[in-house]
Picture 1 (cartoon, rainbow, N blue to C red):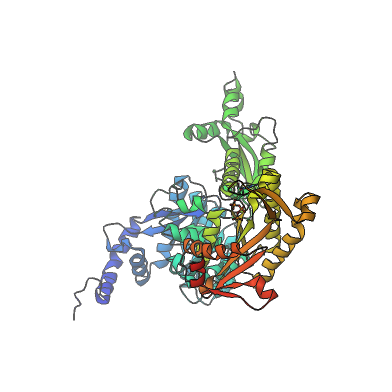
Picture 2: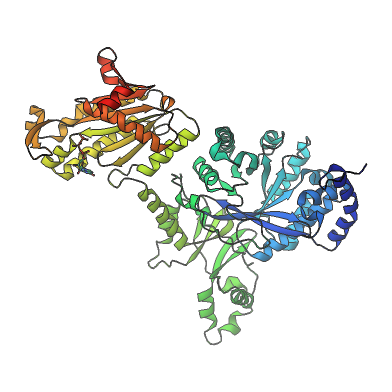
Length: 614
Ligand SMILES: Nc1nc2c(ncn2[C@@H]2O[C@H](COP(=O)(O)OP(=O)(O)OP(=O)(O)O)[C@@H](O)[C@H]2O)c(=O)[nH]1
């Protein structure tokens, strides 16, 4: 019986059989298209590579890669199709002259079936002028088989040529973790299932976090694919993903895009990156061999009007650089073309030249490149990885990234204490609520700070604020807790340490012990100062104390940082009404006075009482 549905299995099988001929024809005619989708480094906010994706002719049923490869498998043409795709991708990528790596899909079946896969891969790359150390082989997890010895030896050979290895779609099949442990890839790509909607799904978040932890432990970079929304991107950047890929950054296109369009979540991410490294600014410029003649290099410069520098590289080792301006100045002199044109480029290259290791931090790079008496912003230098040429860097990029990073952290931090400000605290609370993590948030506020400022002046007031900031930073865990300075004498601490109560009490005790240091001996012995109140009347004020108002997220029911702030305002009012150092917590529907608790039997006030009293 025929099945009339257009997507029915019967129709699909019939089409597959009929398409064997069509496939053989389009392979013969080379009517296979390669598209390139950018892969982004969130640290440098730039494109660092592209995945090559194959498509059949757009007017054919074989346009979709799934149909194309399935038809090839049934027709026994899978291996040949794979090699055709590789050759196509190499050719188009080299012709596009973009920088970065090329991620190229290889099915492990092809490696098993072809007796000498590695050699054929190397030959194809060499024939297209594609450097092996720019290639990343993506092995699809679904088809990873048990013959790891075979796979490993092919990968070893390719690695020795400089090629990197990635495991694709991690989490989609069942063999990914074993492949990860057996093959020790340079990259793993997390299946898009875990990425889609990660911002609203705590389980997916935990999965990705664990994969990232494993990646860190194994020295392997983790890529998230299928990133489509700003919210997903923000979540992934905050988690610390090494690479991102998806429609948000660019759809697959025949001409690889050289620059990333603006992505708000990347620009606005408040991330304290460990370090920006030289590798983040390396821009791959095809090098020239030392034997290339000066006249040919001059021709290259003419063909590439934007190019200011070409590296001279032999077997991966940088020998020097040749610069446009100097070369043309030289050739402009009488008789010089005749003298130099036929000479190899080594006769005119700049050597020794500055070589920067890819792992140097940008601050160190900046020091090295600006050491010259008159550093030029557009001057390029060579970046190496393990002594081999990786790309060129520009002084202006070093300075741009350092400045951007400084602006980012300045924008989000308090200018006096340099602690994160409101935006960062809110985002940390929102994130904990979204991931349903328990936390205690506490407001620290100085009591009667205005009179202190009036008597001692702003500069002394600043010293007290800095002292309190120091106490908070040193008493809370940098890993689990988050100390923010939300303005004036107000601090917010988001606590996840189990011993949070002790930590708060210790801050209060330490503050009480040290506050006398900020007063004159008379005021300290008097335990008070005299200042005008808000109505202009002189009155006595005790030495500075702290009010701490805290909320337990378990009993909150709050769905956002705004709601938390609203609830906290009530608790703060109650804390402010207590004399001396105070520490109150809203837990369930009650306000618990924790300091009073420590001294005498628990004193509790229901929320109704509190709201009525406020
Ligand atoms: N020295 C200094 N003072 C500041 C800074 N920012 C705000 N202030 C002052 O801090 C005081 C804060 O005002 P309030 O919160 O009403 O002061 P308070 O007297 O502690 O009032 P309560 O919190 O109700 O006890 C004001 O006098 C502000 O001018 C700052 O960066 N440095």
